[in-house]
Image (cartoon, rainbow, N blue to C red; front, side):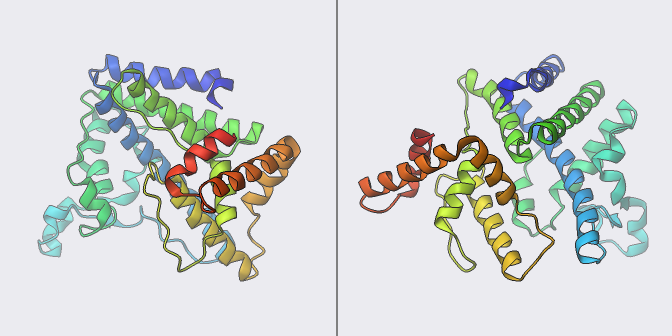
Length: 297
């Protein structure tokens, strides 16, 4: 998709160049720091969206991750009165709040408050916190952080525009953006990562039809696209089975578009999967799934 959006490609190139000129020349370090910033941005966006959609669909007040106060773990053993000087208002940790700060203030705020909060977001005993315990935020210059935040905002604006005007799934555009960021590493011969397109994930999930209670494994999960696809499928089916009328199935909207543009291709893809399964002795093995999908498409 990115090959049809030169504006988006240009912004991603600019982001890489800013990190390079800002003193982070190791591509592995750069992609790590960019990923943290993308996570901060997306967390804020999804939290605001969920707050609006939950209130509208259920009528219940959504409890945001940015409500109330956050106390750093190292101060939680103190008496409540002694914790007060270290309390941080969670709403100040939002991307939309700190992005307008002055450069020096923003860098200190993200280093000392926002990033520690993200690492501790699900509680000190969570798996997320365990895997993030060695993560460090090492953007060295205030100017680099300001430019990176500005460019990421511009990238997300272009992604939203592309999704609305051209009908592309936002998750697909996100995947393309991240894949292009990673391609800088791959071109350096250091690393590489490629994801299965979302429409292929949705089709294969619909063929498998995972159910609540099933054990789902993807030994080569990469970014977890198939696991997320299975999770979304199960949630959607549970909602429809309960008679929910609030859901407009993304699968249905996508299916209409897909049928208009490539109905023959879908039939051919299904046939190809069936043939591949027959060659494999009647079972489409997980380790060969992506290979068959790539060959069919």
